[in-house]
Image (tube, rainbow, N blue to C red; front, side, top):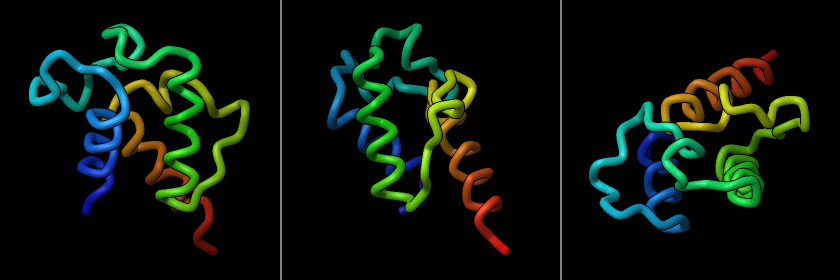
Length: 84
């Protein structure tokens, strides 16, 4: 499964969305009320366990974690950082 699909499945399974099919890749989780501050921590744990990356405190920013699109890009950057 590609990262966007894994992320979408995690979000729609673990958080309330009135219509999960309408979740666009660029929809803000925070602005849409899908995820709150506690939810961000759940997303971080999911990323670390599912993609084998470490999310530092300074990386817990909306530009990294606030949409499917942002998460996919963040995972890509983290994976490229770990390649020697």
